[in-house]
Image (cartoon, rainbow, N blue to C red; front, side):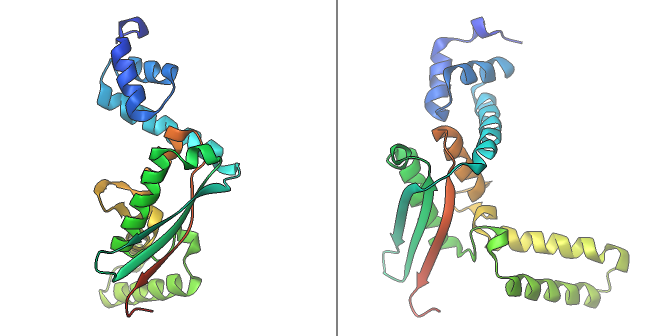
Length: 202
C-alpha cells in the first residue's frame, strides 16, 4: 500500500478540487486506495455521507427557492432547499443542486420529498393493490409479506423524490446527490418542499 509520503501533492489537490474535502481527508483517502483517484472519490463520498448524517440534527434555515419552467410553459416547478448558512447558499455547488432538483422534479413527477411525507391514504391504497395481486397470483402465503414489502420499496423508489434515480445519472439517487453536496459544503442540506404544476392537471 502507498504511504502518505508517496502520494503526490498534485493528486491530493486534484482530489480536493473534485470533492471539496479537506487536505488531510484527501491524503488519507488516497493512501487508503493506493493513489487510485476514482476509488478515493468513492471513499470520500462514503465518509462525507457519514459526516452528513451527524449533521442531521443541526438547524438548516438558509437556502434557496429554485424554479424550472418547461420551454413550452406546460410544466413548472418550485423547490425549497435549505442549508445552514447564507455563504453555502451562494456557492455554485448549492445553486447547481437546487437547479438540478427543480429539473428532476419536472421530469420525474415525485409525489413527496420523503417516504414519511407520503399521504397514509396513498400508501394504504398501494399496499391493498399489491396484497390483491399476490393473492391473485397464488403466491405462497409464507412469502406474501416479503413480496409486498418489495413492491412497496419499488413504489417508493419510483415516487419519492429522495429515493428516485436522478434523471441525469441513474447510478445515483436524488438522496445521494443531496448527501454529496452536504459532504462537499460541510453543512446540513435539506430538501424542504416542492410544488409541481402541469398545465391542465390537478
